[in-house]
Length: 229
Image 1 (cartoon, rainbow, N blue to C red):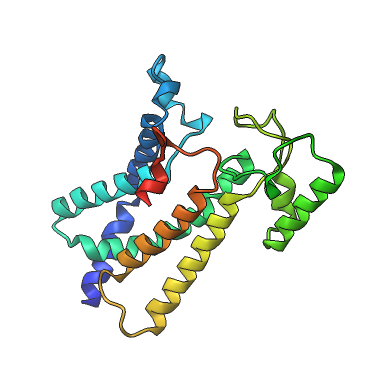
Image 2: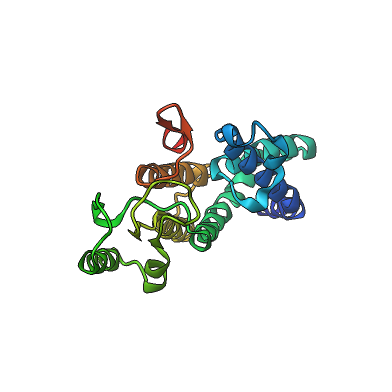
């Protein structure tokens, strides 16, 4: 069993480049489909991935489809391969969310829910204190000072916004550590438990975080990621 698992791991590592490519394509297509109004007049813009626009759920779907086909062609079992992938996949999500930090995107609502601006110095200080109480480090807080001339063309008040990308990153990190400890210490970990853990953990995390975000992908009045989670 161990030899088969090692062989499966080697095969996967050899194909990781294709997994990454398919994941990126899926993430981009997923984003473009639910923002088609941005690209319908010039479809070539869908290729301009450097301008932003990736959705993790699209990457997940594309990766799963690729692995199903890959395993069928290579005649290897799908489930052991996914068991290897998922902890790494969640760790990649932990790291990937920091791209939102640098781009000032995927943030939540205005801290403390102020509806009228401009905010006073006292209100801005109160916002910073609120974020500190949520264990957000100073360098993240500083980057969450968003102005109307920021990266997203949505109406907003200048002030500090909730770093939902940071919360998602930290919760996923806790998820990775929790699962790896369980897998190492708990004797009743079975094949398929990683799938159940990932879908439950990330589904719950994203469901909570998505309800706080200000830039969701939508189907009518329904948040796509909320429905998927």
